[in-house]
Image (cartoon, rainbow, N blue to C red):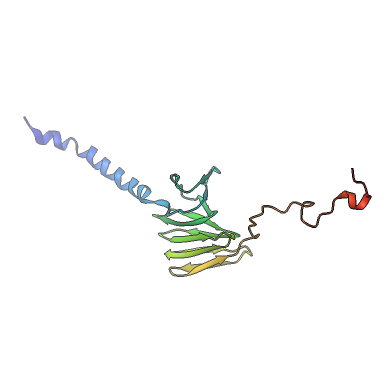
Length: 172
């Protein structure tokens, strides 16, 4: 029984498997990660699917090119292995690539703070300007509209609203 011949006949299969493993490895190692979430986040996948994650819910696999927004609380977001993720910070958008990691905190008033933990992050501001932030740097983005505990302001319902009877004298 010649066992060496059987092993030699398997060389091409082993070599092909090794080459395939090397080709797939970068894709397996690349990832977008969201961790330490204490509030609500939304994830918009590249295909347009929007996923809302509440505290305690599992975070789905996030595809490169997705957009993440912390609505309340805190979150840590990172992109590795060539993947890219955009993070909305009120009117600004931070783009993370090449091992960048940030922490985002959204206050009860809606103000957001972005802290760069590692790498560099490019931020597109609401006015169209860009800035690059490095590890240790931060950005504060004020809320677009103050968040009111009383709910939205509906015209004609405020404390100074008199109603149509003041103008017409009609008391119904």
